[in-house]
Image (tube, helix red, strand yellow):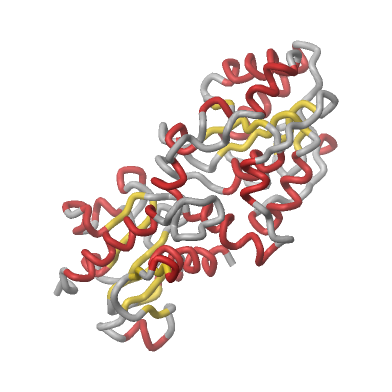
Length: 331
């Protein structure tokens, strides 16, 4: 399902009817016919190593890999900065490492999936209302929630540290409500499921807490998923890790707390202070979510994008793809 919606995101980025702009060419899903046609242009995401003879415009949500088997010269890649890729499919091993014109460094696919696909999975989230008119939790709200079913070392370490520090300070204990619990006994978790298909219900659950621990799977520039969106949409303050220094380019740094897994004490001290000072907490909870200009520059895929903007970001992608197509397919 995520693969399907990643391709939908790519389709919207490449074709903006309200702006009357699109990329040149005919777009195919990776079907048997298009895979063998050297003149085809295939939109792809995932695809499990399928052989494709024509040109491929590939969107990578978070894997750091190209999941199709095609000539390196025939792939236009939208995804993780090549310097942060791992394994045999690293883009800096492809010919385009010397020609950045065959890629756009953006790892926001899952973020855009949340914007575009939410209505297909849940009661349609009104992202503008939830993110631009947030309702802060009341003073009686619980302390902090950790909701994850993918137990990465960084997330587990931070939650465990927060739990122990809260106990040491006599504070309410953080709660783990997913399958991951930072090494705590199973009795401390509810075992709920959390994913993009439950975005609306996740945001509703988080409204009972002042803070949401929402850390990415890895720390990569512009790799930002739906996790921080769920926290913001609930009205709670996100406690975030990820983005490798680019997160402040997207979100107003006054609206969230950044946690360093190597030194969680710094973030916890801010949590401790705001937990006992509701006015300070409200100042952060009421701060604007997005940095001024960030939606237009980094997020607006098309005119009518749920968060606003004129579609400038999508226009930049279309321009890059059209330039790549105009060069002619490499031999």
